[in-house]
Image 1 (tube, rainbow, N blue to C red):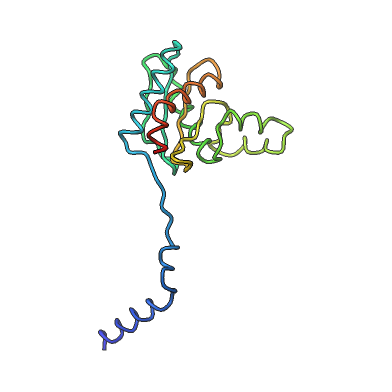
Image 2 (image 1 turned 180 degrees about the horizontal axis):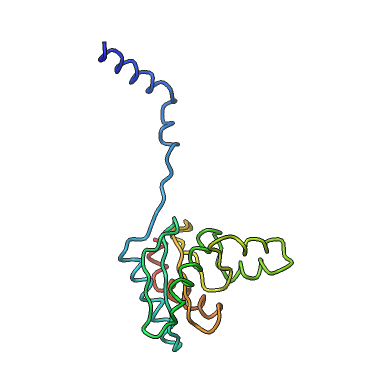
Length: 166
């Protein structure tokens, strides 16, 4: 009796969805390996050091979880959290935070997003794309100003963008 019931359930489940429908139930996404995230963090840190900036670099995966957090020896105590929030904001809103900082100024239509928990709409958060697909974000904190944080992040990303796009 139980075997017949199990067979019936299997048959029913097999006919409940058209052929190939189970594939549409899943989304495939890409994520950086820990080694690639570390390489990116190091390259970004070196780009900032070349400008004599002591910073923290955070690399987050597509889901917003920290993969690497790398703080230079004299970066401010606030920079780990700030770098992480910048990267989280970039990944969450799928925009670099320098652009978001401009578009969310007081009086603009998007100004309300600045009041959401965890949002840090200042420059220094940059999306990581691989062949056009969003795979994570890098955040930098500690340079004198958000634009310089973002410039370091972009320089670090440039060192491996060719391999990301391949």
